[in-house]
Image (cartoon, rainbow, N blue to C red):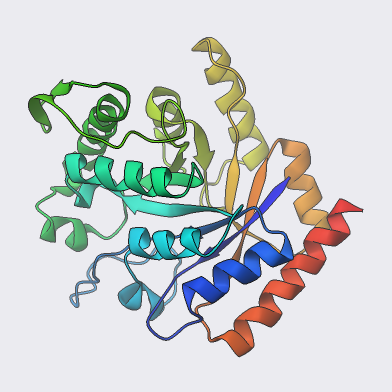
Length: 281
């Protein structure tokens, strides 16, 4: 199993450049940054985590700016979004951002995507929550056209443009891996249609993870695809549980690092590195 770190980069936590360098030095494979452009003060939508919304949600940095800084400061570390709220971004601009980060990093970008949970947040971007999955689908399919075609065009209900030119193209071919987040009723269908990997959060679905993974791989075979990698977003620190996930077919696990300053963050990272090392023996 590969190991990564999931971290909310904020204006009060460890600097992303320092964080990325420490992650690389400790042997982590990847570093993921989530996205929230803002948090509406209404707080009508309940946080799926169950408790009061943590402060980092409203203080998080832009994930592409943070990813660019982290990638520029490292040589091998992969950096990704976990997740990018595609429904809150223009697809032509977003395609350019993804391709640019992948190009400048030499192909080290991982594109985690999702539909989001905060209904007021997406409404502020002009997205009707009931339509977000249809919008997400069209934007993803349109971006794939931009990444892979010299003259790309797309005509849908929510995305519509005639042939365009847009460079750079991503270094990774045909594009950076698309990690589809979530574990809703139709998530696996989305993974099959326009994703490359699945990235659930453990415990968000009543169905056992091993059966969900088996279902995903069965769907992949029926679609004529090979085995689809699975990344867990929010890995526990217990080696025995991690070994169980690995036996299920999980290929990457991301430990959660709190949004804290260096003096607290680095010891957290070292403890996770010790767990990673124990599993490697």
